[in-house]
Image 1 (cartoon, one colour):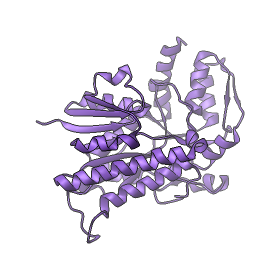
Image 2 (cartoon, rainbow, N blue to C red; image 1 turned 30 degrees about the vertical axis):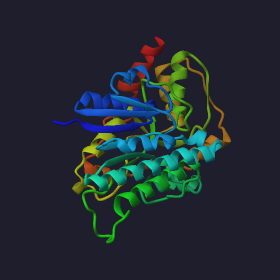
Image 3 (cartoon, rainbow, N blue to C red; image 1 turned 90 degrees about the vertical axis):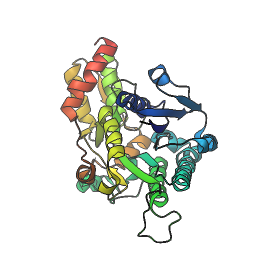
Amino acid sequence: MTDTKALVTGACGEIGQALVQALARRGGYHITTSDLAPLPDSIKKISAEHVRGDLVYKIKTFYDYDFDVIFHLAASLSSKAEVASEEAHRINVEGTMQLLMLAAYRSEKYGKSVKFIFPSSIAAYGMRNLDTKQSAGRVKENEYNTPQTMYGCNKLYCEKLGIYYGKFFGQKHLDENPPHFLDFRSIRFPGLISAFTLPSGGTSDYGPEMLHAAAQGKPYACFVREDSKISFMAMPDAIRSLLMLMDAPRANLNHQVYNIAAFALTAGEFRDRALKAFPGATISFEPNPRRQGIVDSWPEDVDDSLARAEWGWQPEYDADRFCDDYFLPEIRKRYNA
């Protein structure tokens, strides 16, 4: 049997490394990776070929490749995108559009639909104010699509581009959906937390940063208020969701963009869990106005009923299992705490 040919962009990031390892464990994949950085040791022997460099300028390289599935993870994330907005737009939008055009071209030319898996984000939402955020409850995919960050604007627009290339590009009749058209599928991720990589300063990293600091006996000043609340997910669930969505039969999917959820915690609840695990921890709250504003614009939780109904999504890690079985054992081992 011929291996499934997969491209993973942004392969050196937290999600990228975990995804490449998961594909390798499955077997049957010929994996090409792409990133600005050289491959870390964790996946160096798994990748059949690594294309290093700026994706926007490397796209032409991939026109000679025969990919069955593309996982487009490369992105400039929320905090960085706010201070380098033009560069973020170039990476997040131009890079995504170039890759979508490539996938659409290959799908049409060879009569074989390329799957394009796109990780979006809760940043695609924009809550008008705190009262709206607190009263909205679990937000559906088509609600509050008014992002207040460059990263969120980029993600929402790229969702729309993916839907366009998957449903409307080059079609004469809107009710047509021939099998050779690009198969675009997207997940709006909550804040993702890995037990095996260090937080990288992302807007949702205050939870893991707090726990890492507590395990090391270092004081931590949290950059959001104690009552700040958003949805989170353990990295194994995030990777499993990408693979589940990839595997889902096209006939089962009535949408292209899906929320997924696992657990929602306030910064204060993260503090309580840190103190329970490491009683001597020193944790304070010193909100940063810019980062606080970003978190305040994201919903407290999301409604993932579409993903549950159409492709069987169900998280394996709730807040307790995330802390007790996944995250805390690993950081205790890391810091001998």
